[in-house]
Image (cartoon, rainbow, N blue to C red; front, side):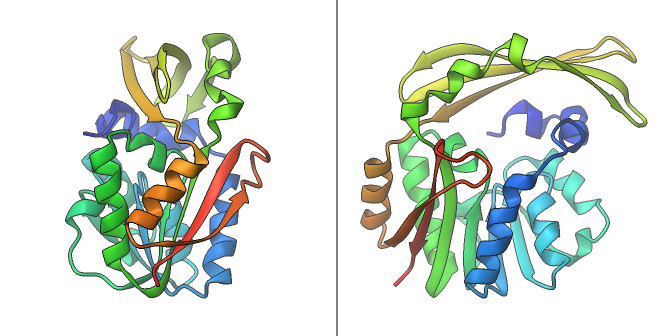
Length: 241
């Protein structure tokens, strides 16, 4: 089930304006070029920012996400017709043969249930052609990123055209490692509506992830640093033999 920030139509519509800096995607664009990928599966595509970025470069992209509201936003964007959008997840994909599968941002960690995670890795594996790559990022648990997730550090007011001012902030609900649960709150000045979105992320250790990838048949080619958050994340590059 998708978190409300992705699944609620009013929140999905403002997701991009609230997070306009997607410089984190630059590294994925470069890896698309590095692996000469012409067919890409974007798992957890959300509002389609990365999928549309690739489609604009002439790449054949399939974007899959369980949040229908986010997929609707993606489909309605300029160029949305260039991408094949699927409301679902990597465990129920139609037959595909792609060069690269990606999980950007929090997607990998948001799949917190261990059986669902294993099924996602398997689904991506089956969608890849032999020699294709799976690339995703996950935060290093040792850096304890959640200690910075509080109202004081996150509070902001964003003016959104056609919507008005929206207050937003995050606070922790529970830390029970490896699981961390937090809540975003949104206040719409136009009518005073308050919406919240709870999320749980799983902070997996590097060795745990490498073991799970190997169990699903992948070869771990490298574990890289995240250029936008150096020293704070692992970027896994795994290949289907």
